[in-house]
Length: 473
Ligand SMILES: Nc1nc2c(ncn2[C@@H]2O[C@H](COP(=O)(O)OP(=O)(O)OP(=O)(O)O)[C@@H](O)[C@H]2O)c(=O)[nH]1
Ligand SMILES: [Mg+2]
Image (cartoon, rainbow, N blue to C red; front, top):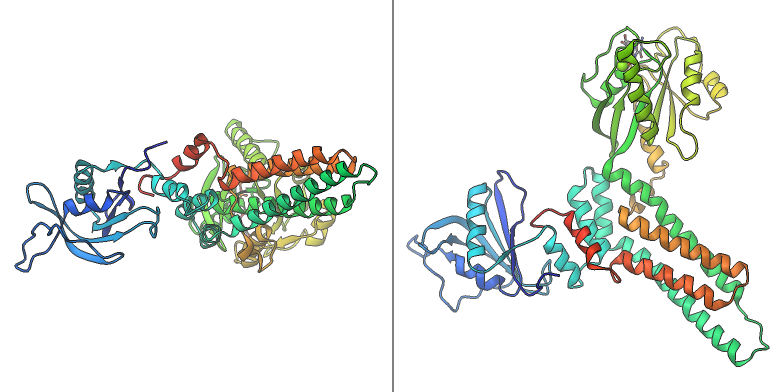
């Protein structure tokens, strides 16, 4: 690990031009280095070096200039000092609000490096906050989620996670396991003292394990929502040629992106766009219409379509209301991946034309509960369609928004491992195996959860987590 005592510096605002840019220093020498390069404006409008006795008050802004060794003013700035432990990293932190251009920021950074600071590694400020106990690992990862959040919902979820909602849930599970372990300990001791006594309270242990299992499963379910919020739900528009897929794509993208013609087989390449439907990010894909005929180019396009369908989270399966169901519709439907495959939303388009196909018939023929009727030509049913997509992620419950917690891939995996151990403990109990064995499983589960919040964690994992950050965070 890096020498925790050294003082790091980085430009903490994103690269590019901005109104202001912030250079941040953290470490025991932060103030000393900061004061070496900062000068307060003198009465006569000239920068003069600071009096040696000058010590800025905590969390106050001071106006002045950054001045290099030759006395040249590099930038006009606001200077602030946040003494540890009441700072982001729990160390002494100095923030210099400068002008946003790349050159002044680079000059200030270089000057700070010259005066003894070291360039921060990606995520090192947050890593220090973690190492100093201000954030647990889940909260540190939420900082990343926060930075990357693409929608309001994702942002709210990341903030909740940063505030410790997810950590709190996990702490409850860990406390539950710890209590169980203690209980088992007592019973084992008891059994040793009085061999005639049958191990009592087994049922109680079983119930506790079941309760914990349920909690863990619930958290894991939310992992899907977390991933969706961050990466976008992979949503693929599919159907036979000419049903209106590209028209739907253009509507959802709010732009004439895809070519729309009355000729079947218009779309050949996949089109992909990142959009936002009622706060839920979708990675929307328009595909080539699927049919058996078609020229070489169209066939290649159809191969792409099938591949996209395999990888989808949600399929928007389009049918034409002005025509009977065709054998192609059945053929396509049969080839949708089943077991834990994508969710499918049935859409009956062109309801403005004279009807040959009713929603009832679609429901019966494909044995589905819901069919949405729309007309892209007249703009009917589109609001309902967007609501339906959103509901498929949040199951339509208003409470869902508040309860979404982000589980990063790393966190989800550890939770899964802990869940397996707990299941094994439960099975061992059901088989009436000795309590010692059950406590081994429980301890293992406890260890995985400890790793999840970052209490029992190797430096490699730590480095992996923080590498995902950019410099300055
Ligand atoms: N009457 C009517 N026509 C529509 C509607 N939606 C689309 N169309 C027309 O249907 C034709 C096909 O539309 P596209 O969006 O290109 O269909 P597609 O499914 O992408 O077709 P391919 O790319 O060939 O697979 C075009 O002439 C559209 O104008 C609708 O709601 N009502
Ligand atoms: Mg098309």
